[in-house]
Length: 323
Image (cartoon, rainbow, N blue to C red):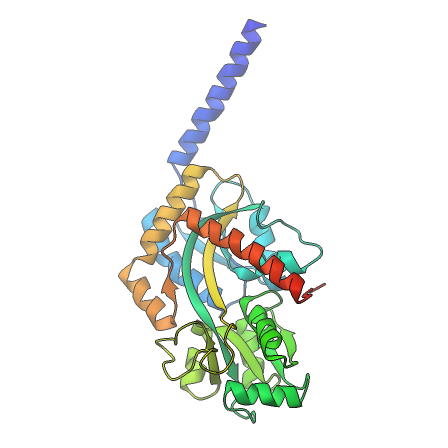
């Protein structure tokens, strides 16, 4: 019996030594970064921007793999079910982490159980934009027009449960105007259809819409933040435009499968924080109208859990469901 206990103890010790060695050697092969929305989306842009310095720092390729669909749930579920070894990490945003779990009856994963925070990368506001051919030129005119023409105005978003969708629901709830939501698989499709006049509005983060605002192809009606965007200084905040309380900030971070070794999570968090402080990245963030994340891994986790609880209460009060 003692011999069996000795062998078992040696086995456990060997496993522990091997696990420690694997963690110390991390990373020893390419890392897959799952972008949960399609090419051209805010998440895709930021994922590719951060992957370059991260690859250089870690000494291994960080490969961005787009897995769009189901409002970010498809890619997020892929991450939740991946090996817990640090070689598959995923981009996180409000949609698949704090929104969808509170508005969908069935979810393939539990965002508060199956995933763990790695790092907050950036935050930025949503913008409410219109096709310039529309008769409303500011937010007040939009609200008046939408009230006079219930469900005749449609707004595009990057998908069900995205921050753009939630911003639209908040707009309806606070303005009492009825508009139709048209979800897409990503920002590029939503923006394209608004440019083409198939939808009248689009609600999006700053990065993908900047060129179209500057060229006059889209009219920015309001920034859903407490302060104006440095890149859109002439565009009022929602409060300035007549709809206080409709602030809706987007956030971008990274998550990993629950059970990933804490040493690997700490290494990733440290390296991502270093990549975010890279002067080139800081410059690009500024150009994109987003702010680099400064929260610790623990603070980022608290952000996710607090927002999850807040949205659960909000969506219940407005009876928002997506199934």
